[in-house]
Length: 105
Image (cartoon, rainbow, N blue to C red; front, side, top):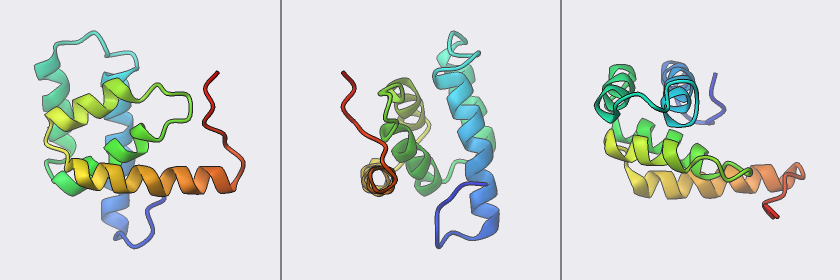
């Protein structure tokens, strides 16, 4: 289940499913599938802009720098990108607190 304090359990469950689908189509095994198929798969999980934005923010905060395709997929599916930017900052803050570094060199 997604670690987003303050969200109801059902939304955290949706985020967990969204993470799998968006990751699979963004950078995973289905990354070469048609864009329309990928967007439809994401929207089959949720069309809620806030949840799509939270997941986009998580992808934006990938310390390996691999989240770009997933972010773009979620943006195309209707993610609230203001939510994404805010959530990415929170995720990076948490990661830095536990020692995850962002220098990708």
